[in-house]
Image (cartoon, rainbow, N blue to C red):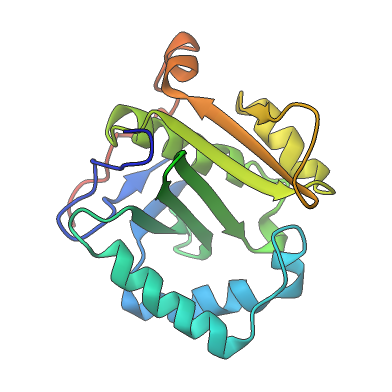
Length: 195
């Protein structure tokens, strides 16, 4: 069951919280944020080629449809600053055959502020404690030294340790490794209260 996600709410991803952020489920009205992030050259620099607006719109429509399925393998959140209400980026957990992939896109002005550390740590806690996931993984371009440091900080293991595939590096963390490290690491409530 390493690729399935069983902790989804009936309409997709549950709301989550961290000390600084509210992670609210992606909704149809978030198209501007999604398209903005996926078409921005700076945001996409270490992810892939920026998308054309039409392609990003099409991808967004698919993501919304997938994330709203009751037993879907795609859960997406908008990262919202709890103190200002500003939307800082997107976070996703996608079921694959070999585990659940974590992805995050954050506006560049919020890089190097601990955002990714906080939200990915929370998403790992959700995936392992509530989502029934056995393995989470992430990928990035080999030239992204910042992502490598983040993955090491979050106790991910590089797979394969010696290399990359077409300039891409993969990192993974298992439930067992997470449990050995003490399990839950987020101090905020498991799920956000209903509004």
